[in-house]
Image: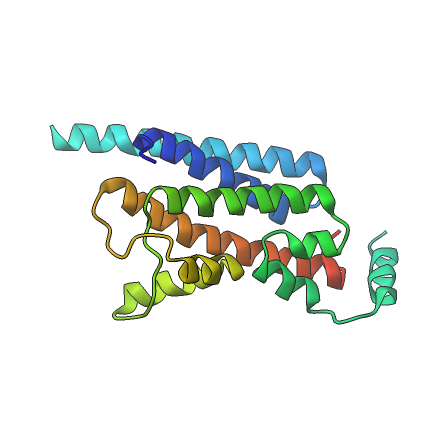
Length: 58
Length: 132
């Protein structure tokens, strides 16, 4: 299996966010919100850091 | 509400660390023991998915500790419980990482173990009444 770097990031973020959401909050609604928040932060920070490294490498 | 949950859990009796140990050995089993079917299924799916994808990407299963990084990786892998033991016995995973995706896979396996430990501790907190 050879996923792209971005696909690997999305899979990692998805699985980690589900576990974080369930284990770190008490109610279903708050679990979903926190899981979505973690997912956006994981993927968003990977995209931002990728662009930062792109410009540093130029 | 929290008090009634505490009383309910204490009244359940039995070995208080059973969900913790079961959750470590089999992802989601701690929550299943506590009849948290939905949470258990999502946790099991996430942790199993991460571990299987890590193996499919030819990730490395740490077999011993030669330096500090190996030691940390080994500790993370051990968090997978029976998944790690069965995979080692079956000879799954790579001995040496030879491609980029293998390096990602190695991290997936380690993080799956760490997430499983978090999940097992959550099951323990549910059992003791610290969490609803």
